[in-house]
Length: 168
Image (cartoon, rainbow, N blue to C red; front, side):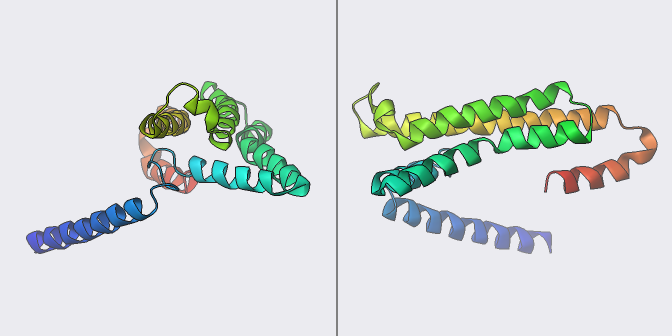
């Protein structure tokens, strides 16, 4: 029975990999790398909106500021709900990193300034995206560690449930 499940899982995984490889080839200009997703697409959309008209430029700036301010809003909500912990400072850092990364994704010529090839630009975008993901993952890991540090032996099941709800 377990071998049958493994065969089906491997077949599904192979199908997904084949589909994703075709999608990446057909959308090579839009989808530069997995690590740059969704920041590359969001930056491209904001750049297109900004270059469309004056109203589009104002809307792009409003969307840019609103999206990059989300970690600060979350930090403020946490501050109102409970006392801030050391790992909560990563939310402030995430907001700053988002401002820089999205600015570079909106203006890709700033990344091209350091390299002439398109492959190097793709590498630069994926490194910028990985910076955002590393700060975000660092926050979640430290938050889970704090939850388990404060736990007692009797409420492990409650903690597992609260962690799954908290991070969904």
